[in-house]
Image (cartoon, rainbow over all chains, first blue to last red):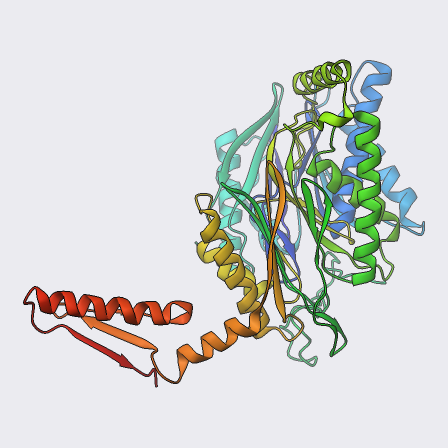
Length: 199
Length: 333
């Protein structure tokens, strides 16, 4: 039901998430933000089971901020991703596993942009583009076909729009709007909400 | 207790989606939370409404239950799920909020109360505990004069100022740390861990019916009268269609001065008025004006009023010499 997508460019990462908070068949909220800001240049996108998402994402968020307070410098995206994965793995075989699927996107001064795909079994993969949810079945092939490592920002947004158009055409569920954010050297930028859904 | 696993990377659809033709058609959503509660924010504060039927697998255990429980002077919670769980956790929440107030000299905000409740319920996730509540409150502004000396007053005001200044770095999610907004506030908290801030929520088995009525008419600029009437209408429509909701409707209105409770109304009366409107005498009243257009005044609780009004129009237009004004009452079918 929920959809996350991330596209990495040469010096930026573009991420988008849908805005629906649903409870069985009812949309309880139309403007729900599924992105959690871990630091100035790292975003965590989190979907999955109802309470687990916010609980786990906030836990990671607070710990990343605590690291900064204790050590005076921020975790890099790669370090944050591995930290998140380790936590997910530790909880996996406990009595309270977290059923969450994540995308972590960040920009590092040294390594450049990075997009990390994580699923509820705590598999971690650094990928040039990734998506979560049923919508991923429909859009990954579009990304496969049109993605290039040297996309400009505008081209990446166009590619994102292509994916969302496909969702509106073929996905049975109504996802009216999407939050879009871009991370680059300057930090996290909010882009215009995409509302290509049928109204 | 396995939850709906919609994120598994398999090719079978999750149970719950009524799409696969090979299985027997399951219920579209689990028939739990046998109730209708709703709450919304508008310019006059927060309005909370609920039915009063307490059901126990097909039996009406109590026709006069109370589903809206006041927590403190400016916070009210609607309850849905297991009555016992809701009553207990509301009391626990009330206790914790009172302790907070005594320790810190100010009321905890509705968002804070929602977070507190959500974290208290978190260890019970996956058990049979079932609480789905909306917390409706008015934040900030009013300090309780009896509790605070001047020193404490200024100390807490400084605290408030400091809070507004230190905006946390985190902007993701729905949180806005360190900023105490005063005004109406509405949060939905569920024992499965959901915590949502919003302006309109309806919870329970009757909620789809209520949502459809509310989505038609709720907006910021409603007057208190209009808001009360739409809330009543929504609960009434839900009780009409949903077997697990019924009996009476409770309405609470929360403003900066606290919550006030409207008298409990038996929806049986409303149902009979509706029936009367549909069949029997004086339902659809048509008044044709001199241009031949017809406007209809539907009845309901205004039936008698409409009839009188139309007769007045008729007599007035006869006085003015306008011909062709006709006042008829017809039956619907």
